[in-house]
Each structure stands twice: as structure tokens, then as C-alpha cells.
Length: 495
Image (cartoon, rainbow, N blue to C red; front, top):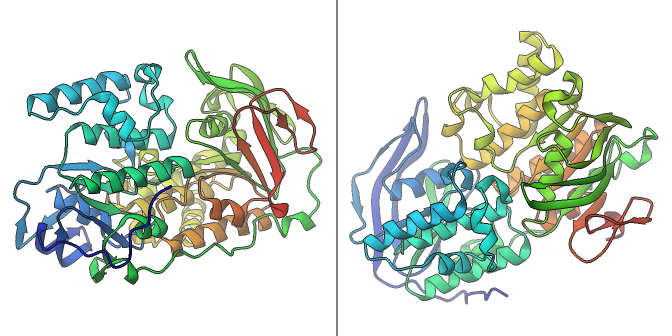
């Protein structure tokens, strides 16, 4: 279990990084407005604030980096002798999809050794929370879950033996066990004298590991101090999505079914005879440790990963295993909101162009109808239209997650699959997104599949929870069991 630091812990006098007058601009928008920062040496500094407040832009500026189209200026920077390691919020942005994991780690380790850094690949993987598994080194990044990809990037950063590690939402997409392991690793690295900058919305993590806190809002620093300036994280109180939906009459056939699905990656099986059903107007949460097959099951449902056995039914009608062979209305009916929001967008087109494309191509909407659908979806998720007219790279992680949800909603799906979509959001934005999902499930009779490691999110929105784990059989919704991918199904209203 991760130890909580005493509130009275004081930062040392030595400053590792000193920045004055940091300003970041993009076309028509100020992202960071002339801020001053002092990052103390050898402690964990948490950089917190609402989505779009400038946290990631500030973290990149410490490295001397910035997103495309962003202009960064400073009046003073001191970071003498600091070796930086950076772990981005979207791990896929720094993983090479064409190379095996072992090849990349080996190349990084050899380059680091030439510069006198002697961290081994097994040590870096162990410190990042990976169990010993030589077979994993033969996999490609896409064969890992989102949480595993996050830990892989941490391992890559540790190979360079940094003196300052900047972590952008490192607990995003992690199950409780791996989340605790990452927080323990942060404390261990801090104990070795490493300076750590933690960019996060996870206030519980801040209370557990941080000694110094910088609070940002609208591109400015509004408060600094120890963890006493950070409110304790509140438990979610939103009504579950399906609470009102239970009063409605639903079709006899489930809206979405996975029937005895088997799927995997090359010779690595992930799902074995897995079954799942979701009614219209119902929210089902799929939970379990990173790598247990949650995202694989969701991708099979969406036609993004053809199964090797079993099948998918939509409203009781079998659909093709590949999205390429499904009818246009079947493609439109199932919307997938990815965990890695920025990677889901074309980086060279504006977010607006990509949102209006769905209603036009999938639903046959006119240009005017598509624009109206896009504005309605953006309003639902709390994004201003001006932000949507920028390219994805100009958006913060939280803004990108809300934008990709808006893109899915604009095409009016009947099934919505959300893969860890609240992980990059501040509490207020998270609450808004969950309220939108709950309202859609009730008012549109949407079938909602939510993948999450956040127990509060699951408890607030799900009617049923499917827990993928090992060593049991798979009960269906009626309570009967069938051999297959190990899972437990329970009614969340009785949980």
C-alpha cells in the first residue's frame, strides 16, 4: 500500500528548476500567461488544475518543448545539470507501432549505456510495475492494454536514468493494484533524490505522494503550497445512468451482445468464450486489471478486432466481425470513444471537420444538419466551438477526451463504448461527462459500455458490472454460468 506523506513535510531550500515569465500562445488563444515556477529539488511537485488550464503546456516548457503551433517564451530559465525524463499522457504518441517492445527497450538501453547510464531493461520494467515475463518483449505496443502502454513508457524513461521525471497523468487508465505500484515507485524514486513533477487530476494521488503543489487555472498559477491547499477528493454522487431507464420498456433482444467470443493477438489469447449483453437504456461497466481483455472485448464489439470464434449481435441481428464488412447504419450504431483521445484524431484536420464528418458519412446528413449535430454534441460535453476549430494537437488532454466524445455523439449512435474516457478530466469536467452519459442512456435509450478502473465512476453510472478475472466461470445476466472467459457479473444497485 502506498504511504501517505505527512502534511507537514517541507520542501528543501534547493531549487532544481526556476522559470520566470513563462508564456505560451497559439492562434487566437493564450495557453499560459506569464507564470513563475520554482520546482524544488528531490521532492514530488504536483501540478494540478482543470482541463485546459495549461498544465501539460507548462510541463513541456520545462523540457524546452511545445506542441505544434504553440509559441513559448520565457524571461528566465535555470535548470543546470538537470536530466529530464518525460512520460506523456498519451503513451501511444511515443511508442513505435512497427517495432517489438524488446527491440525498442534494448535500443534505448544501449544508447543510455553509451552516456554512462547503466539501468538494465529488466530493472526498468520491474520498477515500472511489470511482472517478469520474457514473452512480453516479443509483443508490439498495440498488443498491450492502455495501462500497460503507460507503464512501458515509464520504463523507457527510467532507462535514461533521469534526475527529473515529469509524469503527465501516470495513473490514468491504471487498475487499483498497478496505480498503487506506480505511486509506490514515485515515492521510491523520490527517496533516491529524483525530482518529480506530477501533472494530474488525481487528487488522491496528490495527497499520497506530493510535498509541493502548484495549482493552475486559465493559464495562471493561482496557488502554491503543500497538500493542505488541495481539497480531499469527493466521492461521486451522480445518479446511475440506468436508474430511470429501468422504468422504460426495452426490446426483448439486448441492444448489444457478445456471444462466446474468443480473440487475441497472434499466438497470445486474451478472451476465451467471453459473453456479454447490454440492453437499450442500460449501462454496463467492464472492469479488471490492465491486460485482462477489457479493451479487446470492446474492440470486438465495435468491429475493430475480429474474433477467432463467437460473434457480435446488434439488436438480436448478427453483424460481421470486421467493421469493413458491416453495413453503414451498423457502423453508425456503435460508437467507440478511445482511451487515447488524441491518437483517435487525424492530427492534420481540425476537430470540427472530424466531428461533422460522422453525421455526413454515416447518417447521410446535409452540411447544415451535420453542423447542428456537431454544435449540439460540443455543448453537451462542455466544449466551446472555437476550441473545436483547432487541430487536435492544440487541445489539452481533457479537452481532447471531451472532443472525441462529442465526435461519437454527433453521429447519434445507439451503442456507445467508452474506454477510460474520464481519466484525463478534472473533477468538474468528469462530473459533466458522466451526467451527459447518464442523460443519454435515459433519454435516448442508449446502450452504454464503460471501461474504467475508477471505482467512483463505475459506482455512479453502471447498472451492472462485469469483472474480468481468473479462476471462475462466466455468469450471464440471468445468473446462469457458462464456461469461458472468467468474469463475474453483478447488479451494481445491490453493490
